[in-house]
Image (cartoon, rainbow, N blue to C red; front, side, top):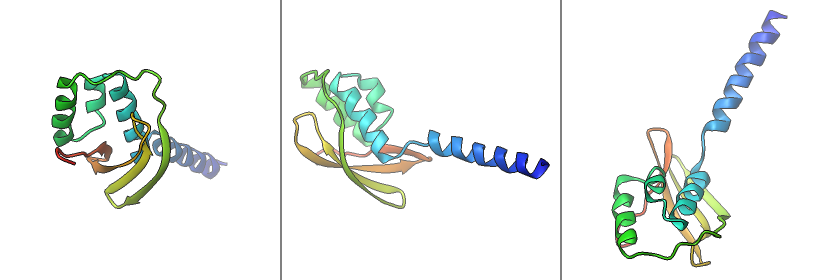
Length: 114
């Protein structure tokens, strides 16, 4: 009986940790949904430092707010600490973005000029 309780506790703990760990798809979704409504500081939480420069440039251009934007996931490809997520962007085009794992957290990594 004691072994069963220990096993159940360990399983539940592992399950909770697994559920709380968001993947590349979630990082892109959160990033894009925040950019759509120009919540820049919130969007930066899901992006690398070099992507912050791109975000800052985009906000100086006064992009259109798209409050009705819904993230549409198409596919992803994950290799080690790097992933590519394909989705429908703010202009209703299919696009693929790079996502990297930094300190255990998936972040959008879009350098300037790409």
